[in-house]
Length: 301
Image (cartoon, rainbow, N blue to C red):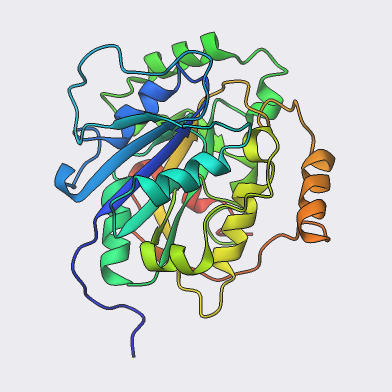
């Protein structure tokens, strides 16, 4: 029997976690909604933005000219780690048959990401669908921020690119994130926009709440590895849709906390060190022109 089965088109709950991202979050929210998102109806998904204890309550300053209207909520009991906010939103707010998690609200979505997610779930009933990640700028931000790259430089880079009028411009001003540096054709370490069916989420669980450190430590890597390596896993990688990280002084991308600290927390939870996942995936295209340079990486070695 084929792994693909035609079913009723799913309804997707997009959950985005933000913390002190007054500059970055509006771009991310815009990118998650129509009309920026193409080939999808706003009736097919919802956008839930969870503010996880920002110093100043986050909100959109003007009535947004996009849809579905994002639901912006404050986490009732915010913790330093975003895992609690994401799990809470998935359990108490999300109405979807499928859930998309975006742990880092500073990551802009590509303009067909939602449509591609929905298409993947429509043809592969129990798929774990994931995207690769990029950093805005000419280098990964752990390095570029030591060489003068900052929010002001990035604002000019984005404005000069023509984004958001030209959504494909982000591909031209980005590089693979470190966790996606293997490219499409070898296993990666995490995804910053992945989606799963509700029944699969109920069975395998959400984010591990042992990750209590600010930023969540290796929580996103752990949940990714857990799902892509599950028994009889059916993993679908989107070939052209990606996320693009804005610099914001985040725990990992700023280099404020190094891997040994993350690893120590991981070991305290699992009594072993983190191991990179090994898994197989099928790919959902087409390969769009703007993504071609990324798709070629690692293809010929």
